[in-house]
Image 1: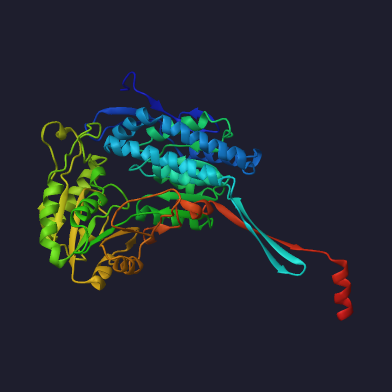
Image 2: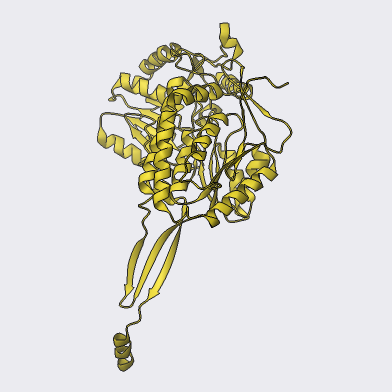
Length: 498
């Protein structure tokens, strides 16, 4: 039964809003209370193919790929439109995804910042030239790839979309966006802003909601898709690589993490504890890929750290994201709730529970998917909760003897997305930062991301880089044009020499 007055979001293909060809609609509910937020159309492979065809046609039959001025203007306008939406769009992000309202507002501002940064780069996509010899030179051009599929997760629906979309458009590509089926609404509202931006030709941006197993797979395998930009879990990233291999497509993958925060005795202790717990992304119930869910403390400060972590984690206010006093929101779904609680039970057998370790069901919390912020102590390096990405508010505390062992433990997972080091000794901080196999290392802070500074993972945390100049170059092909200059005088001289 369809509730009256509830909004339904549709696909956006070739500049038109369309219903998907799947028979059932999606019901998106607030993970804090189970209330219906909106409906969304659902799609099949045919819808994905229509979106790809629209993107290819727009790329080949408009001047978008060559009109850098229009691309810059479009991205600046989108940045302004996104900022102007802050007061009404942030509550939608919170209702569909559960995160605290302040985090949703920050996400929108980060997305606008990325759009603005790449708007400035759209007219500055430089190649280079090389003098190869007296009568030879090379011109190296950066050109758009063509049709790019952008597949995004549910945890940071807008900021993780703009992180790929902004450089893809700045470079002159056409795109097909597939949001996570759990949180498509805020993205659809952003697509509406794109539709109202006259500088963007219809068909350059397309949006299709549907299952990853069908719609997502088609956006990877289709022969007219030249590149896939995916953010999500590592197992799905591996499957995307396998599917993309048949077409030798370019892939950009930002995947899972199990990031370490390393705290030395000479650190500013209070700041380090607050930053490390914040770095575990407890505010979004741990549902962030870079989350520092492994906290490594030197033995001499272990007991002091545990006592402070017990106090701080235990006092965090858990509740609905729209409540301004909330510091920790719900996990996204019942399935994710059960997954997290299963890991908690494993942790109780592997380590010592310090605080949390249960579902919260008091009062109105019983209507949502809330897990108490959980800290485990004396966690073995090879423990399941120290090795696998839980995507929940669960922190593992491990100890180390010295700098060398800290580096070994930090590197003792298959992941390498982010890390942090807390110390007042900059030499020690830099030594450890160089030893840790991670794409990002923060010193005396955690989670700082900027559109003009690259991010990405080592090992099984991904391929390629987002943000910065490298993030723009990810969405280009490099072409070498070789020029032989005809010089009659030099040619005559050469014949004489011969």
